[in-house]
Image (cartoon, helix red, strand yellow):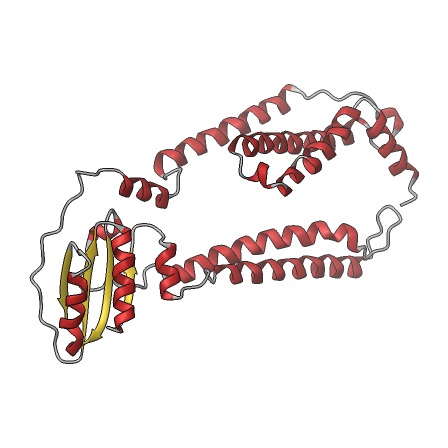
Amino acid sequence: SGDLYEQQFAWWRAAGWMRLVYWSLPLLNVAVPMLFLFRRFRTSLAALFIISILVNVGMWLERIFIVVGSTSHDFLPHNWGHYWPSWVEISITVGAFAWFFFLFLVFTKICPTVAISDVKEDLVRGDNPHHDLVDEAPIAQGREGAARIWAIYEHSEQLVEALKSVLKAGCGQAEVYSPRRLHETEAILGRGPSPVRYCTLAGALTGCIGGFSLAIYAASVNQIITGGKPAVSLIPFCVIGFEGTILLGTLGNFLGMLFNSRLGRVPVPEGYDPRLSRDRYGMLISCPAENVEKTRGILDATAAEKIHVVG
């Protein structure tokens, strides 16, 4: 910007007693994350852990760089010197760590710390003798019109083969119920990627445009001149645009997830087996009443654990 203060401050940070912190920032915050460009590092658990620690160290050094550097070397030369935190600042920092770990431990005590889908997948792969089997419901005859047929399977492979057979025979429409995500059934049913990504994109674009618009409007109205730069400076405004992108992109993702998951709006279909949320796989087939026997014949050949018809 041509400002003498900014120039001497930059040289002091690069060559003064904070030079180690200064030169470590591009290494830890720029060079180290760029290792993710290589598949070898992205797929290595040890590399991911080490890089995450280094990035965290770099972020902490950045805060020290901003706070300590600005406090030790401000606009007035007679204030220049070395900075050392007081007992109040140290106490606040220790208290912040203690408060964070307290809330984190409360969270891990109440909420699961791993994805529930991973837990269910491990449950399916292992033996679980403690689940409660549902009593076999009496088979109801389909009424005139449409009928629905439930088929319960012990293994996902059996469900996939049964789904292929039912759709190939043109028996009717099928819906799959599973305790974990099954990519095979999504491909068979022609289900594409989640629409939540569009909500995330819309939120991110709105946040980016809104952040730049807010900064430009505020600078234009107030004519704030900083460091000799013009009031509307797009490069510094990238920070505000970036923060807006992250904020509204996250909110868009969250709202899109709530809307598409239909929480509280999807009634449990008649005949639903609670084991489908634990360790069994099910398929609900909607077909005309005249196709009930044909569909049951196909399902009988797929080694279904339980089959029953609901009107």
